[in-house]
Image 1: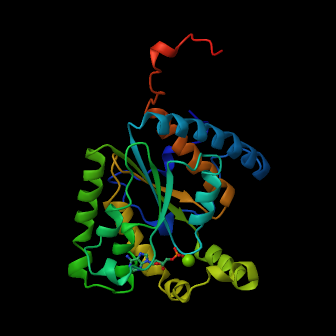
Image 2: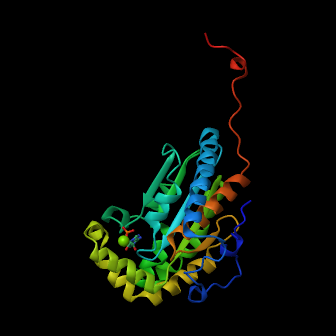
Image 3: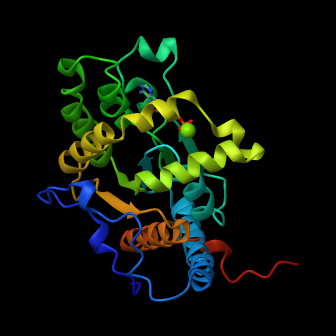
Length: 272
Ligand code: AMP
Ligand code: MG
C-alpha cells in the first residue's frame, strides 16, 4: 500500500463526474517536492518492473491499460516514463490514430480487438476505441444514431475481454485548457517538437467544451469496478506519472501473482 490517496482518482458508477469541477493542477496527495517525487517514481518503477516479470513468467493473466486525454495531455510522455524500467519483451503499445480506409470499412472494434493482450502480454493503448465516441461525436464524423449505440458496444466488448481473463485499467489524463495552450505553443516554438503538430490539434482545441462534454459522458457511463476509469490531474507531469505508477503497482499486487513452479528434478542440483 502506498501513502498516496489513490482512491480519490477512481471514477465510481454513480459519481456524476463533471470535468469542469475537477482541478487538473492538483498535487495535494503527495507531500513533498518535485525532486522527491521523481526519486519516488524511480523506486516505484522498479517495483512495477518486478511485478511485470512475475506476470510475464506466469502467463496466467492479460493486462490492458488504456490512455485517453486531449491533445498534448501527455499520453506519450506518461507511457514512456511509467514503463521505462519494464522489460520490453511482452509489452506492446498500440496507438490509434485516424482509421485507414480498410479500418473504416469494418466495424469500429475490428482494429481494436486485433490488438488486445494474450496471456502474459501487457498491452498499452495510446488512444483507443473511445475515440469512436469522442472525436467521432465531436467532429460529427458519424450520426448520433451510430455513435450513441457504441457506448453499449464498448461496455459489452470490455466485458467480454474481462470475462475471458483481461484486467483493464483506464486513465484519463486531465489537463486544463491553459496548460494545453502552453504545451501547443511550446511545440510551435521548439523545432524538435514540430513533428508533433497536427492541424487537427487546433481544430480540436476550438471544440474544447464539446470534448469535455463527450469525456464527461464516457467517464460517467463506462467506469465499472471490472474496467475502471481514473481521472489523473496531469498539469504536473511528475504527479501524473507518480499517481499512475502507484495505482498500477497496487492493482498488480492485488493479482497475487507468483512465479511458475520450478521443475523439481532440477532443484538442488550442482552444475559441474
Ligand atoms: P495523435 O495521438 O496525436 O497521433 O493523434 C491521433 C489523431 O487520430 C487524433 O486526432 C485522434 O482523435 C484521431 N483518431 C483516433 N481514433 C480515431 C477514430 N476512430 N476516428 C477518427 N479519428 C481518430
Ligand atoms: Mg497529437
